[in-house]
Every structure is written in structure tokens, then in C-alpha cells.
Length: 281
Length: 335
Image (cartoon, rainbow over all chains, first blue to last red; front, side, top):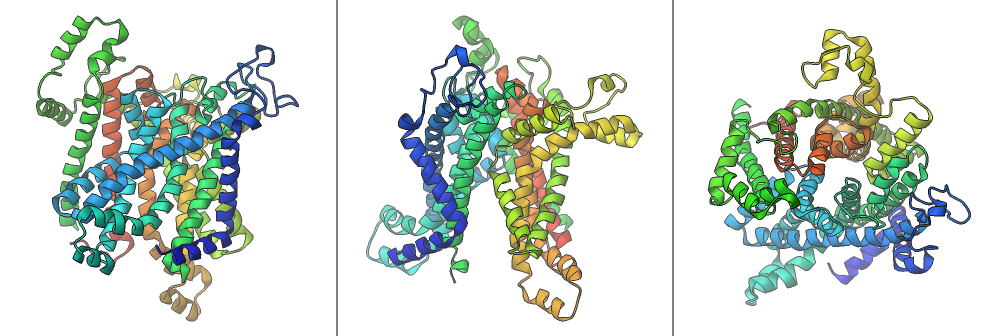
């Protein structure tokens, strides 16, 4: 995309109310994540057995958990984790998915057939079940969960990349690059990939929300982060034991996950609309 | 049509073989079954002997052939922890998941399509904005959180629905179900009291499971309906003086349904995945609970069997969705 086109997209994005809300919410979450150390009233992993399972009060705005740890502080530090986890999962999916999709689309022939058949087979698995199977094999842990969520998303990035490469590679400017003697790698990296950035940006934004949800789900199932990590899914899982006596331990981590996912979904929807050439006219 | 169906069925064979290959490689290359079975307590000699007895030193293609051959004979191996055939366990739990998924699918179809149509008809009114906002929040909510919240509100506080389980344990003693299809069995044998109890237990988990998929289907239905109602033939129908109801339901809806059916079919996979989480919250005795049990017990053959069966069912449902296009749109011809 040309700079002028990006300016048009940005203008359209700024007019998209939902996207502005999403971007605003995301900005607040990023600020919370970056300044967690300064905002959090208590250390996230230090408990006080004199104040266990306290409902929200003046000293602990969102209450305390069964170890007497401040829920608000844990949620604030959890923001860091969730955003980083979402971004790394998307990065894993992007690196492998874009590479495979670009090779399949650009080289074609048997390379395309083999790569896309493997991607089709991976898409035949329900996403969360495949992620569960991968983490089961790798062993539980937040890093493994992030890798699993990333791997599960590879086929969708590969498909989008392949489709976009197929349409871009026949365009005149790629032909011109080829005529000047540019090699395959140079054409792919310098000419093709920058021109398929738009669909990948939309997919990555929506993919981040899926990654946050799936990682939290793995945490909830006991396959993600380990205690005492303040990961939202794990906090929900621990809180579920107190649904009748301390329901706030369930409500607040869930609201935090929903807000993070909602921010990415609103922004993703807005980006899709802003980049859609049909809507642009 | 018959030829096309056969062709599509044949094309499933490489996909299903691919699924088995992915599962085989995933479970053979990454994990050491001897380590998983004997764990920390087994001596190295015992682990070595077990590896030999399981044929883990054979070439990979021989191991894969053995695995595939067993699958073709309906043998998914023995559960390491429960000491029962995996096929028996999986098939025993699967009907429970099918009934839950089926209920969620009905809610998704009816709720999603109805909301989408209403939003499209009332485009840019507060009904449209509110339903789309609720849809967006529903898509963004973690299903396991929603499950806990509805248990807290409708089970613990209001006592409207049972907290969890498939049916009231005292009633279970009065009846013998030949399969896990409890609801179908009660319906066809006229056991109304039991059926009512089963439906009572089904409400919360199925609504929770269907929440995100309903929202997604509502969004897709709305956008396709909005696309279709702008087409010339709909304008012609209106110009002819047809009632709005006829225009929407007889002319626009049928054509708008094709992408919606595709999305609905694809949601089956999401529902199967979501069932893992929903069942864990509602203690529903289906595949999700079995998966959790397998994870907790490090039961590799059981997880393997669950993944293979779920993926195969998912592929078959997608085929059924493909085949349904022709029924909806006579312009689609299979050749």
C-alpha cells in the first residue's frame, strides 16, 4: 500500500466509532501493562493470610483471593501477560503461516499442493482441541500454551497469504521486478509481501483476540500458566472454586479477558472496514 | 448428485489419513509413551522394556501402519489409566457431547438467524445497534467465564436451574439408558418426567456453549441479508407490491442463507471445541470431561482417540454442509 492509501485508511479508521473505542480501550490496556509496577497497589504474588477472601473494600478495591493476594494488582500484572501472550502467539502464527503461504502461492505446483493439503488437515481439527493436544504433548506451561495457540493459527495465516500472493504475483509491478532480474526471494520480500500487508493486519488483530481467549482457556484447563503467575485464565480457574462464597474472584478476571478481547475485536472490525476497497468507494 | 457425493466421500479419505498422520506424528515424535506411562517411578530398564514391547524402535512408517491398521479395525488402543478400550470410552461419552452440541446448534441457528434478520430489517435503529453490541460482547467473552457466571446467577442465587450434571442422580437410578443419547431415548420411550429433568439440566450448558456461535451467526446473517436486500431482484419484488414479509422471507432470506449455512456448519468445530470447556464447568459427562480426565491422568491413547474422532466428525459435518448447498440454491449444480 502507498503512503497516500494508508492516510485514507487511517482517516476512515478515525471515523469508525467502534474502531476508535477499540483503539482507546487497547491504549488504556497497554498503559496499564507498561506501568503495572507503578499502578498496582500491592505486589501480585505476595499474600496476606489475615485478609484471605475479602470482598471488594477500600483497602482492596476488587477484593483478595484465597491466599490474601490483592485481586486488582494481579489483574493489572495479568494485563502484561495477556497482551504479550497474544502478540507472541500471533507472531508465531504469522512467521510460519506467512512463510508457508507465500511459498505455496509464489512457487505453486507440488509445493503449493503439499503445503495447502497439510494446512487443510490442520484446519480439520477443532482449534482448542488441537491446542490441547499440542500442549499435552509439550507439557503444561505458559510458553508451551503460547506455542500451541500460535501453531493452531498457522493455517489461517497461510491461507490468507497464499490467496493474496496469488493475486499480487500476476500484477505488472511484480512482472517489472522480474524483468529487471530480481530473484525470487527479493521479489517476495520487497514487492509481494508489502502488498499483502492489509489482509494480514486485519487477521493479526482479530487473531490476537483469539490468542488471548485460547491461552486463557488453556490456563483455565490447567495447561497454561502455573501458579502463582497472575494469568487471567488461571485466576478464573482458581476462583471457580469460590463461585458461591467469593464470586468476584470469577467476575473480575472474566471482565478483564472480555475487555481485552473486545478491544482487539472492535479494532479488527474497524480495520477490516477501513481497508475494504468496496466500502472505500 | 450421487456421483458428486461419492467423489466428495472419496476425497475425504486423504484428509482422514492426513488427520491420523498428524495425530500419529504429534503423539509419537514429541512424547515418549514409556516416560508417560511409567513416569518418574519407573526405572530406566523398565522403560526400555516397555519401549521394546510397544514397538517404539520400529521404523516410523511401520509404527504408523500399525496405528492405521488398528484404527481401521476400530481399535484405538487401551486407556492407560482407565484400563478400558479407548473406542468404548470415546463412543460411550460421545452421545452426551452430541446431544449438548446438537442443542447448542439449534440455539445457534434459531437465535443467530432470527437476531441477524431482525437487525437487518431494523437496520440502523437502536434494535440493530443493541443486538450487534451484545453479539460483539458475546463473541469476546470467554465461554468458561460465562458458564461460571450463569451458574452463579441462575443456579446458586436464583435456583432456576440445576448447577451441573446430566440429570438428577436420584432419577438416574429409575431408568436404564442403553446409550448416552439420554434425551432421544426419553423422548422416544415417552419418559416425560426424565425428559423434563434432562432438558432442565441441558438449558444452561447449551445456552453457554451456543453464546459465541449465536453471536457470530447473527453478525453474518445481518451482513448477508443487508447485501441481498440491496440486489435488483429484491427491489423488483418490492416494486411488484409484495408484502415486506414475503420479500424478506421468500425472496431475500433463501439467498442470504448460503453463507450462513457455511458458517453454521463451520461452527460445529467451534462447538466441539467449546464443549471441552463447557463440559468441564457443568460436569457434563461427554468428550470434554473425558478429555480433561485424559489430560489429568496423562492418558495418551485416550487423548489420541478423542482428537482423531473429533476431527473426523468435524470433516464429515463440513461435507454435509457442502452437500446441503444444492438443496438451498437450485442454481448450484454438482458435476
